[in-house]
Length: 188
Image (cartoon, rainbow, N blue to C red; front, side, top):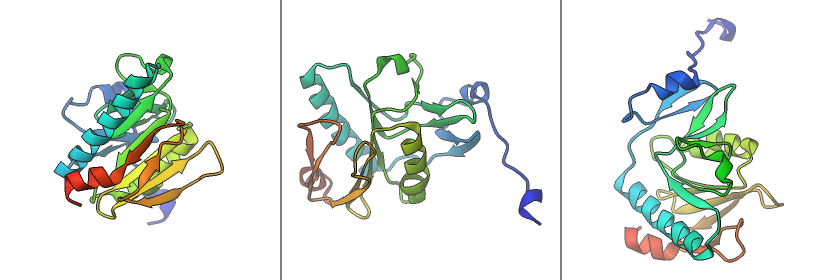
């Protein structure tokens, strides 16, 4: 069978996506739906710890930015439809929020790598987030014990840190996250 004659995956519209059952975890890339695995205990613990750090920082600054965690839809594109559910995100432009989702790129995203599909975070989402206008994208990989920081607003493209590092959130002047403390909590 030649590539041209291979069946093409069925694409969905926003209206079809919105009729999916609430308990179905899925993302859409270029109109094609992909189911997501449920997060593990380590994934959930990392997500809660990082969300709390970001939330407390943003609350102390009393600014307009908000932190959200999955499941919360982010529509990166209408045509073709691309909807993601980042593990953690910061959104500073309240006009992007419509009560259901974020319409457009968040300022900051953290994805926690699932063992079942690491290429989603390292390749697919990196591509989509960069092209959509995300300012900074972190890939936290508990299996490899690394944090990969992708800062798209400067000469820094991608820097990898071990889990015992203090890592700067580049979109802020004074926010640092000590992963050694988090790793101790997780015994990793």
